[in-house]
Amino acid sequence: MGTSACCASKDFEFSNTSSDWTRVIERSDLKSLSRLIQTLPKQDLAIDDLLIHIKNISLTPLSYSLLSGKRLIVKFLYDKGASLDKMDQNLATYNLVAIDVICEKDYTELLEFYLPLYLKNLEDSSNHTEIVESSLNLGNYSEASPVNYSTPTQKACEKGNISVIVFIYRYFKNKKFIPRSFDINYPNEKTGETCALIACRKGNFAMVKALHKLCQADFFVKNRYEENAILISVCAYKFDKKGEYLSIIKYLIEKIGVDLEYMHEEVLMLSNCEELTFYIEQQLVLKKIYLTKEEVDLKFGMNKNKFSESFESNSSVEFINSTLRRYLDDNETKSRLSTITYVESKTDLIFASIFSTT
Image (cartoon, rainbow, N blue to C red; front, side, top):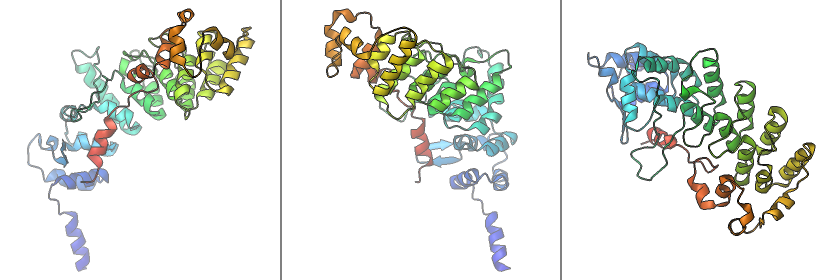
């Protein structure tokens, strides 16, 4: 009986410390969280105070709950009066945006609760027609990184979060207005890539099929360099052998009907996989285009060991657009967001910092 009393007393031993808050949030312990809230001073902003401290990061309970993807806790705190505006201000300190975090971290259930609130806030805003996308680069990190022009939906696509993409599409499917942040066909303002083109570049066959079959995404668009889905996939395949690019290219041609004739000479030049090259050549034959990679390489003097030198020295190669130039120049490739060397968001860095043990 004594042991039982001891255990019961421990349930109420809340010191209202940072570790108390993190523990109940991580466990989704609504009962203990309610008791913690009761220990707060009777002030309106108490629940929105910076009560959680991990290393050099200070968060409100709502901020920490959202970063942890705890839908039940976020809803509970919101119903208890926690302010979304205060949460946004807190996250902005670390250059984080709540909707970006949710989409990037694949918090689909949390998105279901948060999205209507986010949209309501946009409607109430005087400039809701223009949604300014914020960078997720951390001010605490000194290394330079490019400005991130991706929408939350595009970030979800980059991460391969199919459930988020499908949820967003279905949520807005029958609505008259779709904010650009949630339009799967909206082009990235820097690269011109839509979700369809991003999925091709990433070599994510499952995402490609989901976008096509479930979301009716437009795969006939081109990026700002006039590259179509096939060319982007072939380019990416040169540098990333882990993606399902061959399956994607076949799907684009056979199921979706993307035009293989468009810039087909560049496609052949960029192909460095025998199976892919053979497939492209055979598909061109079906279109009565009798051309081989070897013939294209000879035509434009493309030496396999000295791509760049041959490219610069051959004046007859002027027809080639920026596509080939970017993919043959390693230095330029690394500096462009539209290539497969895409610089990942540093959101994960702050998550690692927040949730690492002290």
